[in-house]
Image 1 (cartoon, one colour):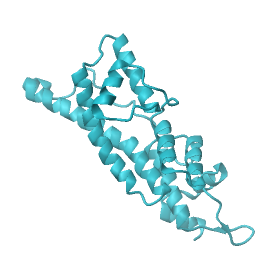
Image 2 (cartoon, one colour):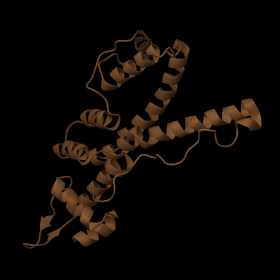
Image 3 (cartoon, one colour):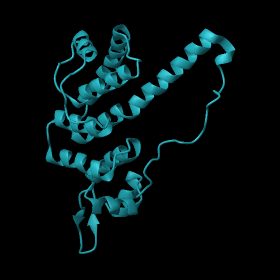
Image 4 (cartoon, one colour):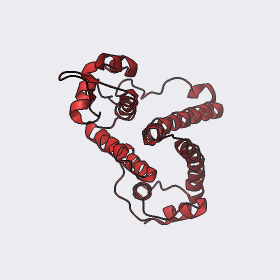
Length: 223
């Protein structure tokens, strides 16, 4: 298909496609003449992946380039999952457990006690809460962990169904970012609903500190 047809099928402006080609996010088309190339379904699929990573997840061009290189290299799925989690959740390199609370919750849930970026992030958060004098009780932490584990089971099951690395990246990126935001929204609604149930009409309506705007900026087309 021509570039204009690729643009129509992928719902991506031709100028943006050319930008992705220059940046190495999208493979070159198949030469037809000295000035014209043709594109196929693989280009449509890759544009879907790029759009998800850029506009749904908010990764930078450099981060997207790193991810698609893993896809093109055909690396193991677990390596793709680790790389995506580090990028999407901004995790530091893997670290062993260092807090007693983290150790207890890992043992209680039967999770592997191995160094990961996620484990390091949990310990850092628990340490920060402890410094502020608001460390969660063991019962609260375990309750939260069990709820998170149920969500993780659903997300990993979805990732397992991915047909290839391209599909895996899209499913996993959405699971780690947009589905995580969905959980936050549901938690906010649950808390608001429970407040109304507890305190009645006074808990309804906007709060005194409510404000509009300040939403995260999404990359503009062509960025």
